[in-house]
Amino acid sequence: SQELEQSPQSLIVQEGKNLTINCTSSKTLYGLYWYKQKYGEGLIFLMMLQKGGEEKSHEKITAKLDEKKQQSSLHITASQPSHAGIYLCGADNNAGNNRKLIWGLGTSLAVNP
Amino acid sequence: DGGITQSPKYLFRKEGQNVTLSCEQNLNHDAMYWYRQDPGQGLRLIYYSQIVNDFQKGDIAEGYSVSREKKESFPLTVTSAQKNPTAFYLCASSIRQGDFYEQYFGPGTRLTVT
Image (cartoon, rainbow over all chains, first blue to last red; front, side, top):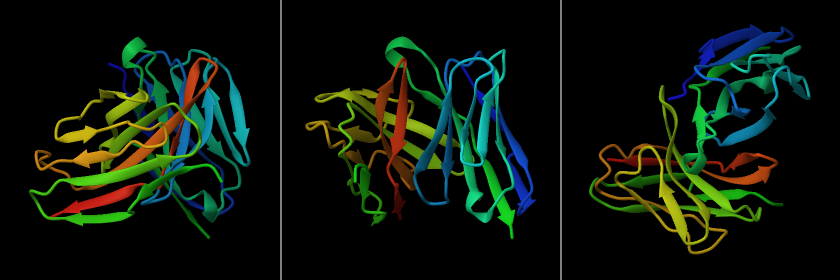
């Protein structure tokens, strides 16, 4: 079965610094989703990637899917306290009648002012 | 504003009682989902429904039940058979975007059973 590994598990950065979070799949990714979650709240959809080499941006957050479609990276430029939260990646398992999202465990980000 | 509502945000129950968590959406989405989130375990799918009057078990359906009588509503009942019911429960609905389904989440309900 497909598994997603996120790294790092947690990250503390100074405001204004850039950072990268990775999501690595045990199988070729059919579709990869990035979400953000504030503690105790629901998930906010950021973006979805499907093609190898694809790159999308949402405000100061950029996500890319590598050419081999087994890893996605999420990059935040000039981080702000509002970027703090948990970032989760989810992969579409493309499994016919049992189609669902497989989830990583998340990366917890803290941004110090 | 369109969105997904879950109520209540916090719920407390005694062990042995059934409890029903509400999930309503006005996004006109066909599919709806229930997830459970525990520290260190990520999101786990409990049940999902792709159409009214139909639903399927997810990965951890034991001890839970659902109904889908209306497109807008997908309530989850946590029964006394669920051994570890204390958790954060998230409801989602999805819209098809080409070959893919984008899931949108409600704010969650934190259930504590003592």
